[in-house]
Image (tube, rainbow, N blue to C red; front, top):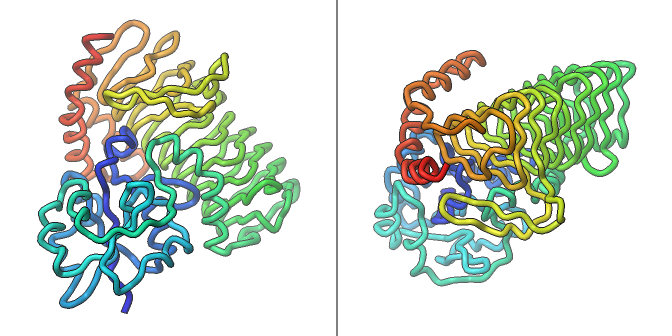
Length: 414
């Protein structure tokens, strides 16, 4: 019998804000899959989830007790939700041994039993870490996501890995005349995909994976490694470069490169987005551009909450949280972070750090009224046929609450 699996969040969760404010860290996308789906696919089993208490309703309520997971005389495997799971790493987790598997000081996974239940239950509803400190440690080599730009940097390789894991090749939809395939063996086209004349699918440098129900309009060029999620629409003449993942239900146009879109977001018009990560229900106005390279070619610094971090990277774009929007012609500087439920507009570069629930631009900023933000979120979701439900509102209210301090500091300095 296979060990039960629990995917957990650890204390590094704040380093993945604002993307992880509204979802567990393992709900973030990298490659074709989310981090959780990747773990489950490699380990061959569905999992339970150890999450922050306010996010539990989004993942089926979370765990009630680890006693339910471990079972009498059994063991469970706990996996850090920030890990990029691979078959080689999975083989390192010995079934019968009580141990913490550690990579460069971080617990990647742990095999636990009945003797650990009390300590693990005491940590329910908050990031898990200290409860695993007493386990015998075994060093392993693993890649973990520490910051938002790590997701972007790993994305191309993860598209290749996920595509290989799925083992899918060839077209399951009719490929009409006038569509050009480069390295056809590495192109996957799902059922119900509509490809217009003049479309180029170029898999010469990595797979092009188009999920079911996607529409790609005329004269669009798509270069791998690339993933387009179910039901998304690629607008006429779009240029989408490799190492890009577009989640389900998006509308994408213009020029996009080395970018992840979580899902259900719009970047429909001309303008460049590169080395960026957009959350869900995001809308970028026409002509929005992101800088992802400084003129002096130095490494990019990014502010996350109260800390500014030198990424060590030359290419870093925009990180925008769920339900945020920007007006036409908005220009974002390298390494800009925009929180949840923001509305940004006006001339010039906005600040490089904008906390959640902020409204404004060059003319000044104010707090985005919570009730209005919730109504906008509801209206946008209903337009896509998605009923928000009380869980979504509760999460956004909690995000508003936990970002009060950063918002107040921003208003004082703006």
